[in-house]
Image 1 (cartoon, rainbow, N blue to C red):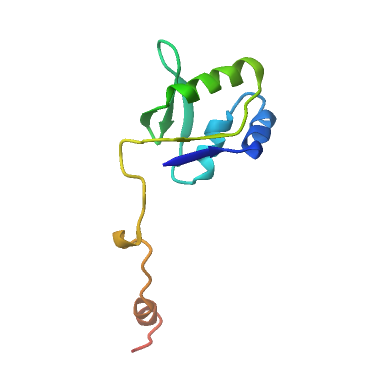
Image 2: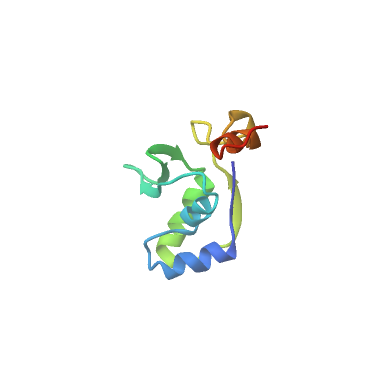
Length: 111
């Protein structure tokens, strides 16, 4: 999954007064996860907790977050995030299929 941190995410993160990072806001913009949180590793670095699942961040991103934490500065960038479970929802799952006949029966119409 491609994550793009834009200048808008960076500006918005500054307004949160340290509560959110641009990386968190970029992931939240995808609207794939209900709970997004950046957590520190026990040693050095960070990981994302997405709906309770720990997702490792690339080393480059961890360095940029560290710089953000120290200086509050970050340049726009993009990276690939690889969550363990499949978070994509396709029409083949049947979640987005609309059958007009189903609606018709609920209102007493007969096709």
